[in-house]
Length: 361
Image (cartoon, rainbow, N blue to C red; front, side):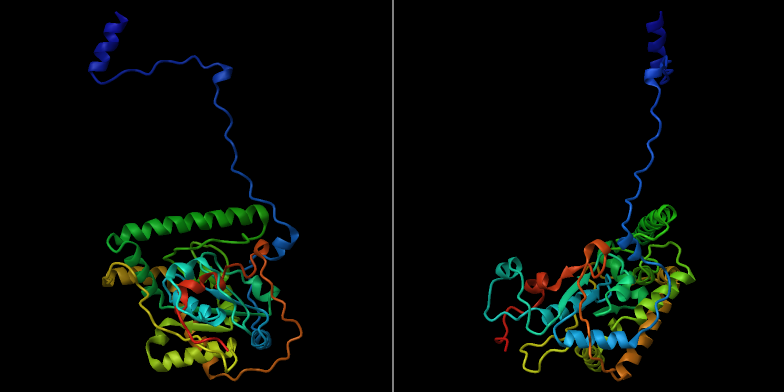
């Protein structure tokens, strides 16, 4: 009779769940707490971002540039996604890598590590992680370089390169990841009383620049994050703006800034140059006015930081370099402290410099 009743219940699409007799052995285990964040050493704690404004130090910049003129110190570049970062990488590869003397195959160029050009400084490029502002205080003999682009154009370029169709879904997906990243950073700060030593920010649609240069993942951004980012960017030796490179005069002015910060002997063959290239490499399209307003609303602080970068670049173009006789040019990268951490420019020689050049003098 019980089997017949169960069959009728199944026919009606309903069957009561069997009642389990729970014993002590079947009781659910207590929830396991999230894995505790790693304990930082004292040296690492000293190297974490603080969101405090850095003093602008023109003398530091002058001495760092004097170090690179001697082929000492380090050059650090912050590669910002869809903002002309690859163009900057190409320039730095041509600065650091000794040109090829003969024509070699693409395969040969990609598998072999480049040879450093004489009288050039060790060069690293970071394109995945946020910048650590403590680097400026703890590695002062470093030349810091970056390039920015209008924030709305940057997000549009990223959209058309990644998806190009489902704007709202694309935007919301990245924002969810941004909120999770911010939540993790806040939880780390609550337990450790310091911000994470390193934050990976590969993609972002809301105030990307401010997060990168403040060194802290945050959603939403506050005035404190913006002030920290402004002070960091003001201490960079070379700040370029992509839109400024659209004319020959603009490229010439940008080249003068780079050449002053990264000088080469006058006899050096094949000196580096800025070669404009398309930034967008995906689906072509134009944002609607509504989409542009949406991006602008998400990037209020980034627009202000971009305007500061334009002012900073123009001031540096018009300025006269200070003189400095450097006493200490030590600026060794330290991955464990996230200081000057990035890809060695010599690893990108094969894919970023011309196949053949006249022999280097």
